[in-house]
Image (cartoon, rainbow, N blue to C red; front, top):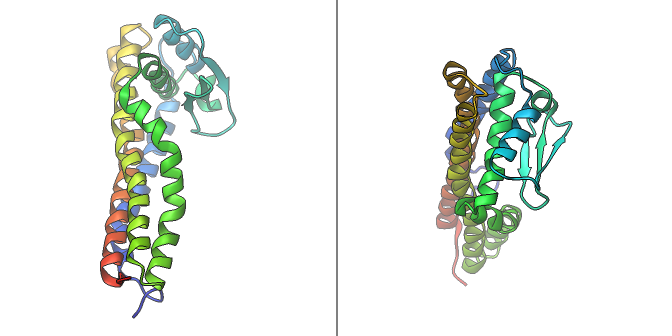
Length: 231
């Protein structure tokens, strides 16, 4: 038995890792490119977020500046829209796109967008699954315990489900962002084309996350098949 000294199933993860590296490079490069292109409106990311929130009657969401580069996110529990320095005070096309995208999440929260609600409910389950899945699988293999192996696979299944649910949430937020920016006159049609490139590049990271999770689950299933035992 070559496990754990040599595990050929690691090769299953290679496509996901390659795509993840490509996605990270793409989003950084695209964001950097359009961070150097100022919008004609002259508005900052924070300005756009505030006005878009008001346009939808949302007055209970705070906008905060954080120090993490590309760490922009909306926190539905505290109703806080957190923007990085590159977005908060910048007038670039990239900044406006990211700010509008995160505002899109706040709007999703307000209107009760089901995929967002589902993703939020899956967070603790997915965190638990990502922590416990591989230890359970290893222990199950060592003890030849089919039940432990099965439980480990189900635990990681929650991670896969979370990643899959994330896709429509992020795609919808980006679609809302472009529509809001154009509809409110913050971007011209040509500027919106460039801003959409930033959001499309960011979407690749979520696709990469889903692909990596699926391939990891396939690997777990193969390991279970190779080394699973009977109780």
